[in-house]
Length: 204
Image (cartoon, rainbow, N blue to C red; front, side, top):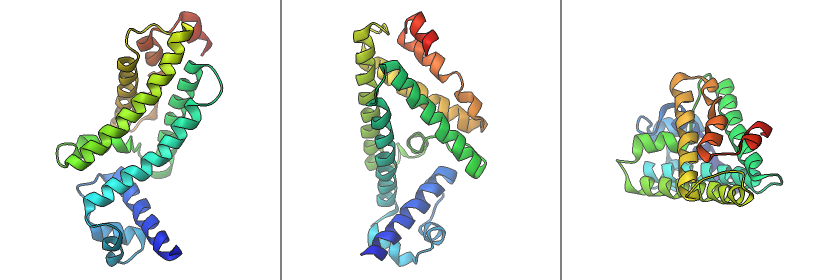
């Protein structure tokens, strides 16, 4: 059982890395297995199709990201401070990726949305669920901030969607220009979008 589980993890890890670097469409099963160091037959033992692998990679990546988001957003501190720490964690991930492979990898979910959302309904639906979950988590923080009078928004959920969209957009630009400095204005723009009090913006 241990060896079987290890082979599956190797395939998932290799596929995730290759998808981040090159995208989904250009990859073949043989290349994924070669990168994972497992025989091609192992792939079909775990996954019926390449799409099934892509969905598993998405779920695996989201499980990691969701834990990070929940840990940061549910931690102690003022709501805007927690949101700022989430942005800082996103920047740190992109900088680490650039150090490791020489290029900014961007967001796996955003990359696949651009590449795959019009090609497979299963992947489109799963990505929608993930982005909706992200909006839910950001919305909860904005609701807290609004109750404290730290922000001024008419619709917290729409504001949360805008925050997630801005985060994705800045990461996209960082990937396009291979420059994590493009993430620099992210927090100031978020505060402006939320109508944060001047003293809150200065303090954070």
